[in-house]
Image (cartoon, rainbow, N blue to C red; front, top):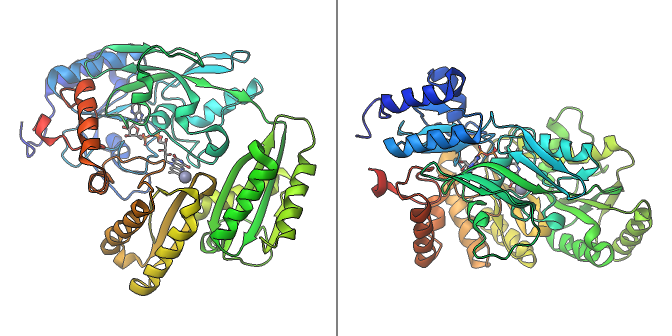
Length: 479
Ligand code: FAD
Ligand code: ZN
């Protein structure tokens, strides 16, 4: 089969899929396929020969077995909110999208055992809601939670604003059900907290971005729902002081810190100016802002603890100003600014995004180095870093003149990634590698890392039919 073949996916494969999945399970009409081939920000457009929409594990297994037989590459897709072009097909037209969206049932929920078993296509929000209904918390929280799906969250090892307290998705998964590249079903759907019986196979699928198996269901960990919560907004002079504030909160509020988010003045001003209904938390603009949330399982006492931290913060002169959310509406307003600033900054120009991580103590140094370099080399570019500063994870985004975005993006990102690696960091904290960052990754990771990952890939997917081109380049395997 040649890359120039206009319909490179065998008709017999698509006919078999129609028999296996029925008419609702196979999309062939280009208009119906289109949304599955474009990324969330509509910056990248791939092509797909078809979209498969199985409704059960057995159906997923059957179509993956057919794909293996016909050597058809499959791109698993959840809510398509991924930011690294991992869930959308490439431009070759040889990929078939395997959407998990119809697999959206909650299978079981156990309040006392504190876990639930859900299918991969459940949206994160549906899972959070179900947990809340029984007085439990499923802590993963992302700006995309209305659309992203549990399968996608697991495949990307998603992070979000509660990692500090509850960990990444990896820490929230107790068991998995996965369809392997040959169509067999691996049943790892245990709900055990402890299980030291050889290699922990589920961990390999978590964060594998659809390259090792298709996740069809997961046993997820639940937590007691917090009973008290307090949200504060602080204006700070620079990221170094933000870290001092963080340390103080760590000392005095410890594990009650649920979120600790840093925002640049540019992002906050844009959100307050361009997002409908958003109110400014503090009267004056500030160079940097912190959004901090405390939550715990006790009925009362959080106020006193918060007051103690805040008086220490003020006494030490660490903040310029601060306020506390006095109502759910005020809290929602603060989070709207945090989640909506990227959308708001789009009113000012084009955005070059990323998702880097450095040791927490290196954050001020990273910001300083990038600001100095930009001022010197690219004065027309404005940085607006924000992120989960308690995890060392910054979305060090850049606002650039739209006409120069294409030209500048690789230059800015290469410089950022070099600085990040020099400071002992990583080019992706939570969004993953997908197709977008593959080259940037392998220019920086050790050859032995590449060799080991390739060996894992070949062991799980010897034909290279699962999301080829994501994370690793495998051209030679299916050319
Ligand atoms: P998709 O985009 O559909 O797919 C992502 C990857 O997973 C692809 O490689 C795909 O092949 C694979 N995949 C999907 N489903 C399966 C499956 N069932 N089996 C095997 N592989 C599968 N991410 C964070 O980590 N933290 C954030 O704070 C965060 N905030 C965001 C805010 C916004 C506004 C947006 C748009 C995105 C944000 N993201 C964030 C990124 C994104 O939402 C996450 O990566 C999310 O986990 C992707 O889930 P999805 O269902 O949309 O996956
Ligand atoms: Zn993030």
